[in-house]
Image 1 (tube, rainbow, N blue to C red):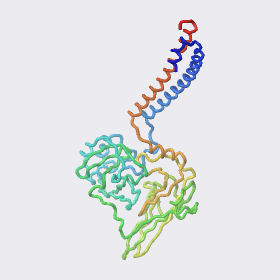
Image 2 (cartoon, rainbow, N blue to C red):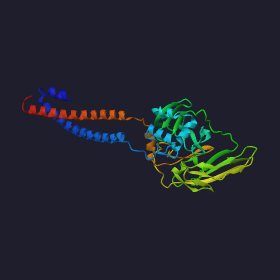
Image 3 (cartoon, one colour):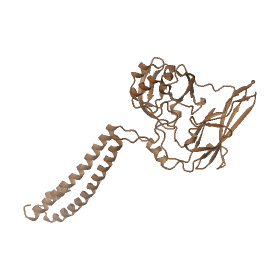
Image 4 (spheres, rainbow, N blue to C red):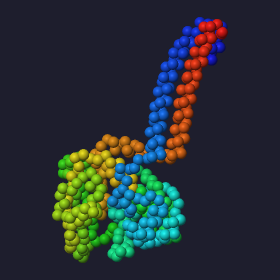
Length: 388
């Protein structure tokens, strides 16, 4: 349009009115593109702060972490290994991983697959989900226990962790997760097998929402201040007596609720374990234990765990023979988090390239508009003085 107007001006001076209208449009476009350039520059400044100085997660650690808060580097992990912090040396030695194999690891990413297991401090699912316990001899005396849990069972979305990947003659592929110091393997180590679910005592758990009248709390959303009664049941279908314990881990429940009735049990505040004394079950006998949790008045909008994806996931999860989850009516902001988690993850290089391309395009159109405006001014001046 600009070229057509200018080329026809010598033959039709009346087109100067169209040139004037075009000049007004260019002034409007210049203002719009100046504002666009300003807002893009501000957006890129904010993006650079997020890329080069990323914020720390508000939920960066979990009680399930093998190393609370994770490790900063492979050298940091090796230092902890040599000191046997958190029983790291005892655990890896039991599995069959040596220090030299850990030292040879390389940077990499750990993704959830149908056979990726990670080591956790406490059992959080159940034997029915192929969760397996690892018993090991502690250097300081006594036995310790940790749990191998299928990573894709811990969340309903794909999970990815930064860490280090290596290869062991005893285990094969293995990894150390940076955010929690946990061991990850493809399949269970050869020396470990899933816990036996065919023992004499059969365990089960059920939940009833007392406030909303749901016999099965999993059938509806739990709302603030709802009271949920959990019933643990142990049955002995065998022909001989057996000794069993009622013990359940409450960490996931305590994220959104508090214990209001322990049902005669004792709560270990360090491990968040609720337990009753041992009982003797006669053949065919069943016993139950009930406790009550009440949801908080204001449910937290804390993001999902950085090291434990099952943390703050808008559900109350409990494991006792089987895994039971009660959905929670979380604040709307958690829905935004769910959408963000489904977006592709980009690295620093991709963000920098995008910023450069966007800034270049916006700058080009702004300076092009300014150039056209100056050319129109010169052409109108030359036409009025008779040069054209």
